[in-house]
Amino acid sequence: MIRAPRRAVVPAGALATLVAGAAGGCVSPLGLSVPETRLRATGEYHIVSGLDVPAVRGVEGCGAQALAAVMAYEDPALDAAEVADGLPWHHVGATPIDLLLAARDDGFEAAIARGTWNDVAAAARGDRPVVVMLDAAPVLKTLLGPVPGPKLMHWSVVSGVAIDGSRVLLGAPGARHHVVKREDFLNRWSKADYCLIRVRAASPAPTAPSSAATPGSR
Image (cartoon, rainbow, N blue to C red; front, side):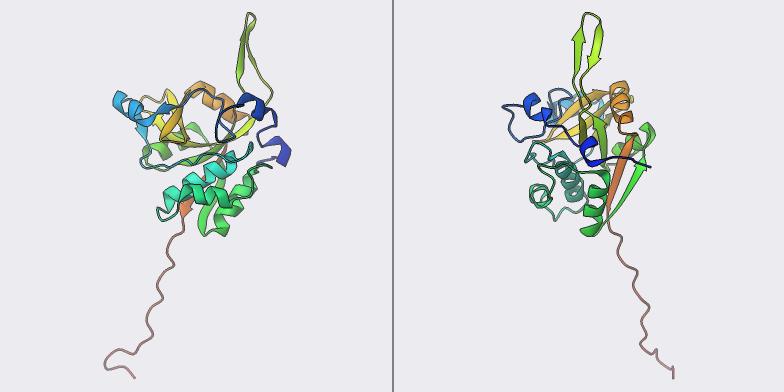
C-alpha cells in the first residue's frame, strides 16, 4: 500500500530555488535533458514514440504534467497542455490517489502498483508510458563522498529505456528526455516505495445483442 501524506509526496518549496530562472516551473533536477533526435541517433534506446510532455505551470505542477502526458498519449484527440492546465495541482502538488481519481474521472482506466524494473522496461519496450514517483533530490559531491540532498518527491513519465537495460529515460518538454542510470533510478524510485501508475484508454463497452426478431421467429 502506498502511504503518502500530501506534503510528503510533492515537490518541496525548495524546488523553486533549484530551478530559479528555468521556464515552466517544476523541472526535474536529475540532470540536463537531451534532445530525442540525439538519443535516437545512437541506436541505444527504445523510446516511446509520439509522447508529448507539456511544460509545467507552477512549482509543484509535475503531477499534472506527467498525468496529462500519458492521458494525451492514450487519447490522441487530447492536447497534453490543455489537459495539464485543467488539472488543479500546479501549486499544491498531487498524491497518487489524486492522479488515479483524475484519470478515472476523465474516463480512463488507471491503476496504482508497486512496480519493478521489469514493469518499467516492459512498458517502455511496448510503447506504453507509465507515471512514476521518485526522489529527484540532487546529490552533492563532497570530499567525503556523495551526499544526497533533502527528499524532493517528483512525478515523472518513463519515456524509454536503454536496449541493454543500463539507463532509463524520463520525458521532458520539447521532445527531450532525462537520461538516468538504472541504479540511480531504482534508488530514487525506492524512496517512493516504487509507486507506479498505469493509465489506459477505457475499453469500449460490449455491444448488446440485438433483440430484433429474426425471419421466421414468433
